[in-house]
Image (cartoon, rainbow, N blue to C red; front, top):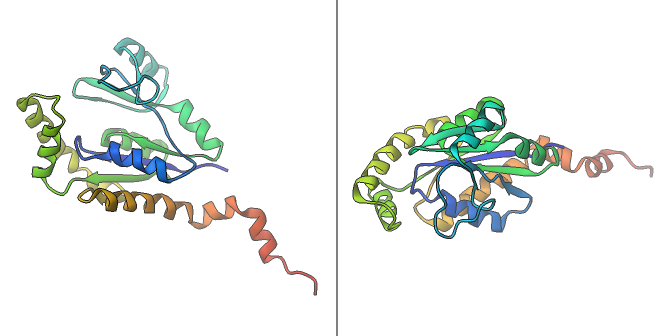
Length: 207
């Protein structure tokens, strides 16, 4: 039985990472594929946990070898999802979640048209600017540049299957969980997961 592939995308500062982290604490058998990146580690980040950190040459060698199902350059750094890891998890029947940008989601859609793609939006541009500013790690000009890029990113919302507004965190988390659960309950998934039970239920018994 093959697992389900979910993609969660959002503009920078929208809160998708916090939502995904909380989602993993609530939903079982959901695995996040750890992305590879060439950007430097931020304080508190662990290699192999938050990202697989690598240099540019090693990353591009993997690209040339076809090692990624998606990759993109964002703000001068490369990000990518290893193909072998994702396919292995899906083959085991595990559901996999990719937390990637819209360019990566587009690449995944071509390779995995059955993937379920979710886009997170902020309640307003003002709120998004506040979130980017509260990080306290970037200069004002960097924040404004990120906000401008975020507006362009949000224009891609129509290419996704589901839209979630992250205004109230708990509600957004509930909505995100609802998408996962609903897709697990579709006929094809339930028929595979509970094949033996269903066969017993629909087989006439002798009186």
